[in-house]
Length: 223
Image (tube, rainbow, N blue to C red; front, side, top):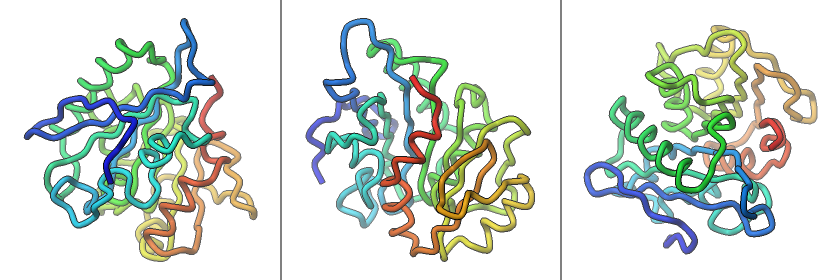
């Protein structure tokens, strides 16, 4: 899928980081938009099998490129790995460099930066947050994360929202116990700061459902 509305920032190994400005009704001189960073899954890498790349499975990149109301108020930043694999410490450093530049060039709010990701990217949310400069991410939102045994648990007080489905149910249960997360309300509404929500869907459908739920975006602090 060719992204029609993205600004291309350089990424290592000749890759791209796609940056989307807030939609026109939410953009005027002097406005400082909140920033939403998205980390894609394995096959959405440039050499992966998903032809839609970072926009695969109706991710935040897809919503931003489509001028969806869900991402309209955000400065959306979506790096793309060149190769299939887990996100690395070097990727985290690259994201911070792009963030610094994009926030400066597009008047983003440095105190309203949120990190989300799907699958491998969902797991990376917690590694990036635990690494150098990771405290800049005000809230963490992981969608069907491909947890590892030692995925870092955010410290108490760091807001977390995890959406998961059938594929990651066992791994999510282990992480939930370690992190002390609470189940979302019966209707799936995220109310609170340390939350987990079982969508009961396949891996791909979990991505589409979570990123299509306005309540999750509303869980992020207001502008």
